Image (cartoon, rainbow, N blue to C red; front, side):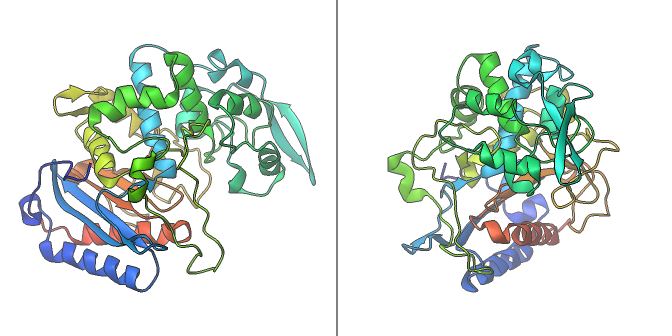
Amino acid sequence: MSSIPLPHATPEDIGLSTAGLARLGRVMQDEVQRGRVPGAVALIARRGRTAYFESFGKRDPASGAPMARDSIFRIYSMTKPIVSVAAMMLWEEGRFLLSDPIAKYLPELGAVKVAVARGAEIEQVDAERPITIQDLLRHTSGLTYEFRGNGPVHKMYMAARIYSRDQSNADQVAALGKLPLLHQPGTHWEYSRSTDVLGRLVEVLSGVSLGEYLQRHILAPLGMADTAFHVPGPLLERLAEGFAKDPDTGSGVQLVNVKDAPKFESGGGGLVSTAGDYARFLQMLLSRGKLDGVRYLSRKTIELMTADHLGPITGAPDLLLPGYGFGLGFAVRLQPGISHVPGSVGQYFWGGLAGTTFWVDPAEELFAIMMIQAPGQRDYFRTLFRDLVYAAFDD
């Protein structure tokens, strides 16, 4: 969707500063010129209207092709909120309870063990309680990601090639069922393949592939025409690429191949999208489950998803920032301070491995999206972009 995905507004019409947004643009352009990032697309909307939608730098640094507003990005974990919404659509149909054990629907996960360190070795003990669907949505299942460490469990994930794009979603769940959990269910927030499992749950409950369910119930109705699990041939000329080598470390930059349809439709990280497409999704969330007269989720469901579901549960401080909890698919801001980035209580956000990021600030009726393909610089650019957007407020 190359056109503006929402009605246009001048910045001052919606409480933003033209000068402040121009400053954001200058900073982004400077980062491009310094070779920190190949290119970027930024979109800011408030009160249902788009005040800023700009592209910077190169879409493909190898060819020199310029970035465009409709460039397509690998959004990695920004897939998770979309798949979480898909799961909650099925929940609204009464297909499951959040407290249900996942093994009720995916019996392969019914007898999982938990790894307990015994010196350099691990012992596998019984889970003290089942993994629930709520655990999957809030990342307290005890599952992990193979790249989140180098302990015995992470090595077992790697050895099982749990990341393979040549497996089906069902194959992956079967493989996970044979591997131990990193933690007892419900005890730690651990970023994980939980949303991949959730994607398989969507398939089992709906009777269609995850991609087909998303297309039918979210992507097509919202007009997200460029969001999918791969980029078809005619659209490859719009695919954004990273640098060949990381500007900080000099190591090769590896981005997932999205040119062929994968067998594995990763609910946790498989989608590609555009800033314009994702803006439609975020406006639906900000509008409490409704867009253009079509209801996707109840207002109360959105409120449940964007509330904190962790309470005293903690973990992974590099991802679960101070001052934040986690809801059903999003990190959720709990404090006006504490965090090193600005925002409001109730703000929710997430991002992707290659640096794409979004947040929604219901108190300010605002959301913002930044799309980049720069894995090594993602934390810096997420913080910088959020700082600059809030610095452009004018009311």
